[in-house]
Length: 143
Figure 1 (cartoon, rainbow, N blue to C red):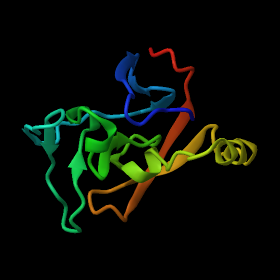
Figure 2 (cartoon, rainbow, N blue to C red):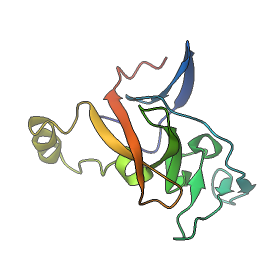
Figure 3 (cartoon, one colour):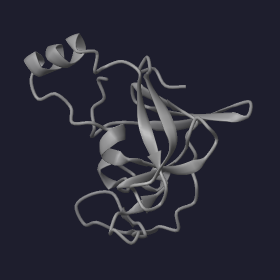
């Protein structure tokens, strides 16, 4: 995936009974934008930062749509698994570390790390797996 983490644009597209989230060059099928109950605080040097609730493990959770930048997204992002169950995907799983050099990018591409992948959907505790979430590369052109 070639997504610039500082300049990703998000869009939700309703397609029949399902919802598709388009993030820069990545597409997530079955994404749920649940209301998280987050509040917003104004940062002096950038966009307002949402304040997300925390679970018992101290992880923030809620809708990524409440964040103005990917760095402001909660630790656990609201999602709907392919089996229809509601839960959360880990921000670190949805947005893995981007390559820091062309050589790393080529290695990731050769290893098949840039294509479609499946990540776990968790319950609010962040450890109990309730399903899977499919992440597929997009064309980078938006919805």
